[in-house]
Length: 438
Image (cartoon, rainbow, N blue to C red):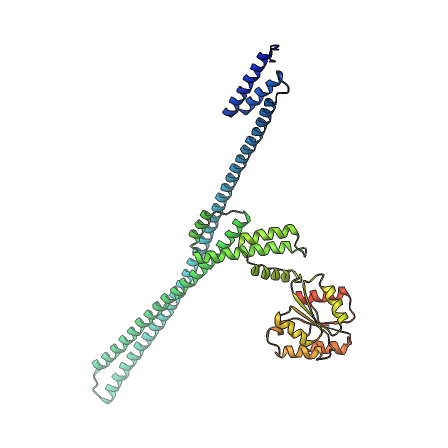
């Protein structure tokens, strides 16, 4: 309800002062909406009151800050809830996968153990049957011997000690029993050794599977952007992963993730500034060194068929015009192009840094390109340079010259004069390993 009009000036000032004090009290109590309502009543008595305007601006700013803080707390709380739900879900999935894995491993171990026991029982039965058959044969021979001896005694009336013959037979039977016992012990010992070997193999297989499971879980957690040391420790404890194994696997996962990021960034051939910043952040997060980064860049480019723009390309030609044209054409794509007017000058460049590609003229004043390549392949300049891709570029482009190049194993022969596009395509093919002879 509107305040009653006040004519008296002193009463108006008193009412304004009272409203200002009430506003300050509401602010101190944290009731900003009520403070805003009260301060706006001042304008009924003094529309230009500077204190009221300052109070109003201050209250509005405080309300905005309070709402921002409440929203931030709500977001933080929701984030923690989602994070907890993801970690809980991940832990459940981990336990589920581990149970399935252990069940499979246990079933496989039981199956193998049962199979080996069956094979062992069959082997023991076969050996036992062989020994019984041998014993029966010996008994048969003994009875035959007794009959023959009895007949011989009746025919020739020779006295022979039958008891001695029986003793010999008993001794022989005892030897057979001992042999049977020894064979059984050997089979049992061999069975124990086989079980130890089986257990050792199963343990190695178990360790390998545990490490693979740990690696897959780390990759999943990395995809979810979950960084929980407690969860990691729990997984390592469940899988019995040692500290050394954990460091090795985590490093492999980081490198794999970085390689995937590089493949995505290089998918269209060039890394954009935004992608470059993302890669820099990943390098810092994963602890990728400069040397590792360069090596991975080279590896990914090779996999994607992209020429390495940092590769050293060595041009050898006795014509300054050809060197100028080729170096100008290539330096728009490749940062490291060096030239040499002779083989001797080229060897000086090679001594400082091994090139990734050599482009050489055939007819030169000191030695020919063919002779230079032959010297390389014969190891005259060391073993490392033999693996460097080599390409001829010459005005002599007839079939005979190309045949000589092919016999030397040179993958590319470019005719002069050439175009910028033909030169770039040939260099790209050589650096990415997609070249064809001819």
